[in-house]
Length: 286
Ligand SMILES: NC(=O)c1ccc[n+]([C@@H]2O[C@H](COP(=O)([O-])OP(=O)(O)OC[C@H]3O[C@@H](n4cnc5c(N)ncnc54)[C@H](OP(=O)(O)O)[C@@H]3O)[C@@H](O)[C@H]2O)c1
Image (tube, rainbow, N blue to C red; front, side, top):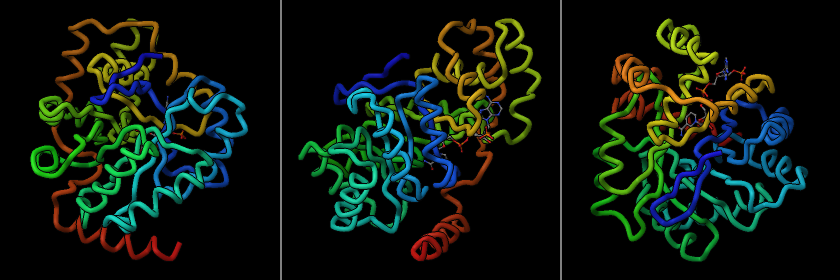
């Protein structure tokens, strides 16, 4: 495993396992499989409703807690200072741990400044080793870095894959000492990502799959990754990306696939803000 040093000196595995859209009933088994494959960084969120099962898998693995790097994210409905603080205490209980390695604000909506203040205080109390944000586009991130904080976000987790490569956003993050982390590194397979001819052809040279080429390309760009699979053979495939190196020509060929457009949605679209608002109310009843 390779590690990335965050802006506060904390080391984070560059490749992690994400549990978005894994039902709570399957999460413990999937995380145990991922741990057996070798993953030690696990990415969950309050809004995935599976933090407790992640905690169960880690506890039952009998691997020392300090070998893991656990990330969770605070949901919009828990923003504001007091609610955020209480929600992280709840996450600590569910994850069955005394500290969380990284806590991110999940979305750039509602009172995220109040929530960020709570994360700063929890960080100073030692309950969180690093704090950051997610889905903050360059304007929001710059605002946060310049006006908003005592502690500069260590990480900004954003959609990053060959079709939405985030080169400019990464440059902006690096300017402020924020590390980029990829969600949906495979774009969840949209646009035939796993059979993209460029990725498949490059893979043939190294005897690797398109998925492995994508992960290697991100690693060589210094992008931290959260990737998800419910199949152990795919977890193995995704973990097996440290024994080859893409040439600069191959890196450039993948760079040329970038459309600079999301495969999912744009957080700056007012219709999406309305969609998130609706989701907040729907999730309240869960
Ligand atoms: N911060 C945010 O707003 C945000 C948003 C989305 C995701 N995330 C985080 O990022 C993680 C990854 O993103 P994601 O889950 O949306 O998408 P992803 O990792 O890009 O793609 C997951 C999909 O790819 C399939 N897959 C995985 N490895 C494969 C392989 N080697 N060959 C073929 N298919 C493969 C999986 O299928 P199977 O599961 O059937 O194997 C699943 O359908 C999430 O789990 C979550 O932790 C964060």
